[in-house]
Image (tube, rainbow, N blue to C red; front, side, top):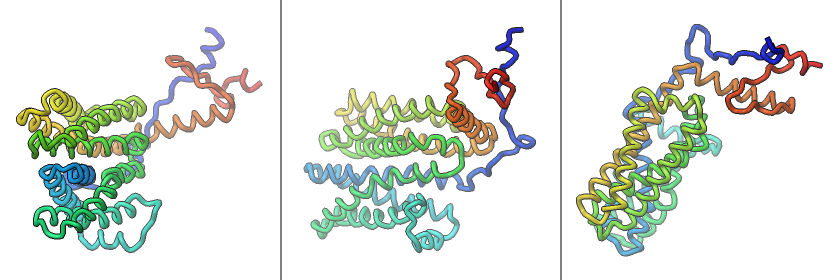
Length: 332
C-alpha cells in the first residue's frame, strides 16, 4: 500500500445522539407564517409600483397597486397575529426598538408602512385629500422595499440550517419574488395599455428570482437538499416552472389581455409557492442533524486549514489528514 494511501482519513459521517435533531423545528405554523411572508412581500413591492404608476399617469394601475398593498399588508398582519396567538404580543414588540433584531425592526416597519399604505389606498378609492394621498403614496413606496426584504433577514437570523446558510441569497430572492408577485398582479388586474410598469417589474423580478434561486442551490451544497426534496422540493419546482412560464408569456404576449392575465396569475402563484417552499425547507433542515452538524464541521475544517496554511484539496480528491490525525510527515 502506498504511503499516501495509509495517511488518508475517510470522510467523516456527521450525525447526532441517536439521530435526534440538534435544534428544535421552528414553532411558526403554516399556513399563517408562509402566508405572512408572501403577503408582506406582495404589499411591499406593490407600493413602489403604485408610485411609479401614479406619477406616470396610469391611474388604473395606481389604484390597483394601492389597494393591493393595503389589503395584503392588512392580511399579513392578521396572519402574524394569528400565529402569535394574542394581538397584544405584537403590541409588546413595539415597547423597544432593537436594531440588531430583525423581529424588532420588522415590527416597527410594519407599524410605519401599514398606515401609509392604508391612507394611500383610502385616498385613491374615495378621491378625498389627493395631496395627502400623494404623500402617503410616497411614504409607502419608500418603506415598502424594506417590508419586502426584512423577512429574509428574519429567517436567516435563526439557527435553521436551510435559512441561515442561505443568508446571502435570501434577501435577493425575497425582494425579486415580491416584485414578481406585484408585477404579476398588475398584469392580472389592469388592461395592457395601463400595465407597462407592472410588466417591466414582473420581467425584472422573475429574471432576478430565477437567478437568485440558482445561485442559492449552487452555493449551499448538501444544505440545498431540503429545497429539492419532499414537499418543499415540489413547491420550489412548481414555482420555478410557473416563473419561467409567466416570464415567457409576459415577454412575448404581455400586450394581449388574456395572455397578460394568465402570465400574471402564474407569476403570483410562483411567488406564493416560493415562500411556502422556503418555509417547509427550513422545517425539514431543522429536523435532520446532518444539515446542522455538517456545515459547522466544514467551517471548522476550513478555518483549521487556513490557520495552518494548508490549501484545500483539488475538487474530487480526498483531503490529507492534519497532523493531529496521524500525518507524521506534517508533524515533522
